[in-house]
Length: 133
Image (cartoon, rainbow, N blue to C red; front, top):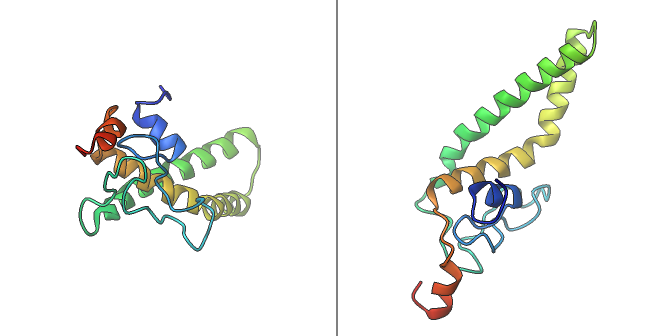
């Protein structure tokens, strides 16, 4: 499920969706100066990461979904694992988790969005080397 050639590999490793070799992001997801900055194209296969202006606005829907799942999961886990947790503590833990994870979730939503629209091609690197790509 996480082997090279699957969408999950590209998402987990933050690699180019097309060849799964090149880096998708300019820097580490917690480099706050460049959080979410995507290369124009893959350094390995030259695949464009920007299909059109505003392409990554759709990633906001993915981020929203991930955020909702995270909040519900944290709320359920804390409520089930700890008895008599006050609402204030529950909210504080959820807010702190969201703040700490925001750069990662932002980047994760972009790579998921790109993987929806950029297909994997196992021969992408070969085509570039031959000059056909």
